Image 1 (spheres, rainbow, N blue to C red):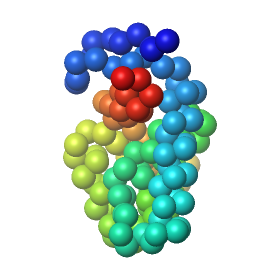
Image 2 (spheres, one colour):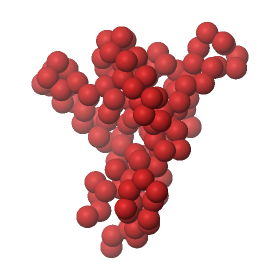
Image 3 (cartoon, rainbow, N blue to C red):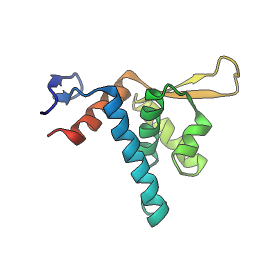
Length: 129
């Protein structure tokens, strides 16, 4: 049985799936991306923005905060490239950076409400027609 759809501000309809199921989909996609890069090479299939969004979606479900440096590592790209994509995602309103309250030298990255909603919509559409 397909998940019911709901009207959203950003797109016409988004399936309603449990957060845990969406996180499992994101985790599997992230794993497949890593396998593909390991087997076929990073140079041919680099998608830093997508890796960042998947990593943030998964970490949020697992209640983990990601620092900027952790996001760069998860993007499997050179730091300068990952930082450039992180800035583009921030400019697009999909991610936000906040200063670490305990260590002002470090910043954390998280999905914005819009970023979370769009990722959930996309992940939900992967399993429902």
